[in-house]
Structure formats: structure tokens, C-alpha cells
Amino acid sequence: MLIKKVIAFRTIPFPHTGRHIHEVILGVLNEYSVVPKFFSLSFDNASANVSAIDYFQRSFVHPYPEYSKLFHVRCACHIIHLVVYDAIKVINETDNLDFIRKIRNAVLYITRSPTRLQYFKKSCTTFALKPRSFVLDTETRWNSTYMMLKSVEGYETVILDVLNDSDFELDMIDFENCKVFTNFLGVFYTATKKLSGVYYPTTCIVLNQLYNIAAAFKECRDSRLYGRVVKLMEEKYLRYWEEMPPLFLLGSIMDPWKKIVGTVALLEGIAELFGIPCLDNFFYVNEMLLKLFNHYRSTYGSNVQTTVVAQSNFAEQDPSERLLSTTSSTTDLGGTSNTSFISELVRYLELDISVFFGNSALGRQFDIMQFWSTHGSSFPVLQIMARDLLTPPVSTVASESCFSMSGRILSKKRSRPAPDTLEALVCSKDCNAARKRRQEFKDSYVEVFSNLDS
Image (cartoon, rainbow, N blue to C red; front, side, top):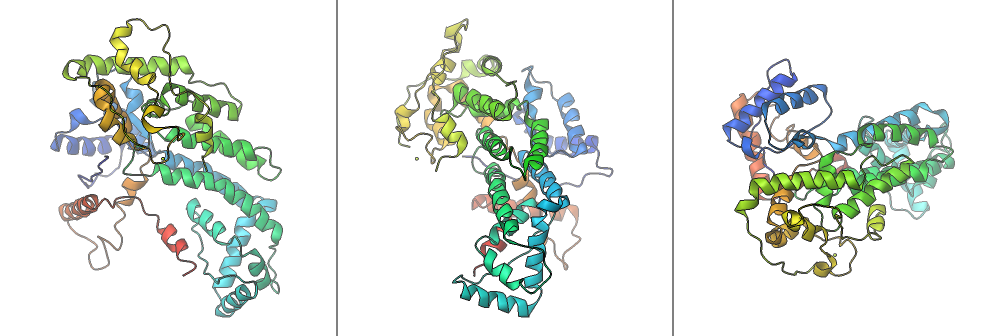
């Protein structure tokens, strides 16, 4: 299983340049003697962070020539945020799409007055609905906007009834537009939740989520209302992911349900949904996999042993699952020279995974870490590859949330502890959460909006 730990909380000297970030992180890695185990670094797109990556790549001389392409992981959730935030900004600036502002103002209008709030609850009873509360969103947090829009679903008639004697320009067509857009945003919200996970690998599922987002784009691309918005979102998406990060491809191949065939099917599916050439074709992915496997084989091959595979037991599909269910899970490497040298890789790529887990398609409860732990002895070199390729997080959301200390570590009465004391508090708090397996990212808005009916 994956283990997450906060091992340091250091002050970075001003100015917060890439060089200073690199020096502080490298100092921590040396302090814990984990530099030889350091595989990748997940950062958001802040310019200082990108600059720090250059310093790291100059610091490490890695025998694998393509290592630099695997080292830097851009936070996928941060990119999704940029894609969606741009869309919401355009909607707020477009007169015939300004339903978000109208609904936000309506919620504010109802909740700011005890009299109107009382009338709203009475109207809910009249329309046989359970009275509920409403919470305003934070305009810079698109997920809170999504949840605010979701919270008004089913209460459209009641809200319009309360606004009946006011000057609000809100009508049912605004709610209909809202529902379409909210369903569209749901794909991004689901992707963000899944890619923010802590206790399961995310490099092997990120392609699935990017395919689902591409499918949502195609569905709304020709919309009379949202065509312009979707076009802007697609441009931002392709800016970062037209050429997929190699770690996403190799992590996907380490999923025995996909391997090369499923991975390429997702890549080609994404390209087809956008109507663009597929830059990462089968031959490119195959060559990249062979190079990395040969490197691991030469590094670890003499220290591992192979055993026989043992069988074990295995569980509304999303668009990526429907696509993968139509592809074969086996692969023929074809014109590969020195087949004996890569026999382990061939056996894995030709493995029929349904032999182990039945014909339950992709099996929702499939635990990829357990698979490599149980069956990895049959593929010893690939098991080490899987360890390195599956552990990097594709999101920094959970890591950033653990440093949110307001009200938990820092307070009005304890606002200026010494740096060493603060570091000890942060690390011990995370250590305790790790022991209880409670380090998952908890969105404060989810808790607030989940209690609207209480």
C-alpha cells in the first residue's frame, strides 16, 4: 500500500526562487539519506517551482537517458482548475450565459433576510420539498461554485417563487442552462476527486480521467450556448496534454487491465475526440516501454528471481471504461529482437488478466498495488518498475492541504511559534494522521454543502 509522510516543514529564504526551493528540498533529502530513492517531484505551475526543476535535473545524473521526462509531474488538478476557471470567467462575462452570477445573487438575496428565508422554507413545504440551507460559493474556487449550483437543483420553482416580487432577472431558462453546465462540470469534479487520492496510485488512472474530460468536450462542443466556452477549455487542455507526459503512459501500462493496448486505445480515443493526430502512437509507447524495461533489467535483473503466477479473487462504467472493455488486454510486441532478454515483459503484456479476476470488465474494486504485491514475483523487474511508476502523485492537492494549519496548528493564541516548533507540530500531526490512515484531502466545501439538509 502507499504511504504518505510529511518529513519536513522548512522556511525557504526570501526571495522564493527556484534555486532556494531546490536547496531546501535537496537539504531535506540529504538529511534523510533518500536521494538514491528520489524518483519524481510533483509541483504546480508556479514559475519558481518550474525553475527549481531545472536545478534538480542538473543535480542528479541518472543512468537512464530519458529520466528527465519522468522526473517532473505537473499537478493535474491544478491544470484542471485552470481549464474550468477560465470557462467560469467567460460565462460570468457573457450576458446570455450569466446564470452563475444570477443564481449566486438569488442565494444571497434569500439567505441575507430572515423574512425571505422563512418564506423560502414555507414555500418548500408548499411544493412538498424538504427545506434546506444555501451557502455561497467562493468565486476563486470553482468546486465551490459547482456545489452551489448543484445545491439549487430541485429547488428552482421555490427560488423563483421567493423572487416573484423582486426585480431579479432570473427565470427557468437560467436554471436549465445551469443544469447542463453543472452536469458538464461534474466530469471535472469527479476527475479532481479521483486524482487527489492519497492511498492509491494515480499515475495509472489519469489517462482515464483525461479521456472522460475529452468525451465531455465533444458532447458539448456543438452547443449553441457553450461552444465558445468549450473551445477555450479545449485550448487550455491541449496546451498541457496534447503530448501526454511519459509518466502517465508508463503508469497506465503498469495497470494489467490496460497494458499497452488499453493505454494506446485511450490515447487514440482522446486524439479522435479532439479531431487531432495522435502524437503518442503504439510504436512510440512501445519503444519508450522497452527502453525503460531494459534499463531496469540491466540494473536489477541479476538480483531478482521469478516464481509462478498464483490466482486470486477480484469488482454505471465511465466513458474510459466502456472504451477499454472493447479492447484486448494482450499485446504482441512484434519485430522485437532478443526476445529471451525481454521474455518477462512479453509474458506480462500477453497476460490474460481475466484469468485472475473473471469477466467483470475492469473490476471497480481491483487493487493494483495488491496485484503487484501478490503476483509481482512472477515479473520481478516489472514489479520494481511498477513500484517507481505507480507511486508518484499526479496532484499536489492532498500535500498542500496538510499544510493548511489555520485553526488546527496555528491560532490567534499560538500564531508565532519558532520554525523548529512549527515543523515538529506539522510533522507529528501528519504522522498521527498517517497512523490512522486519515490523510485524504478533505474539501471544506464538501462538508458544508453536505449539511445543507440538516
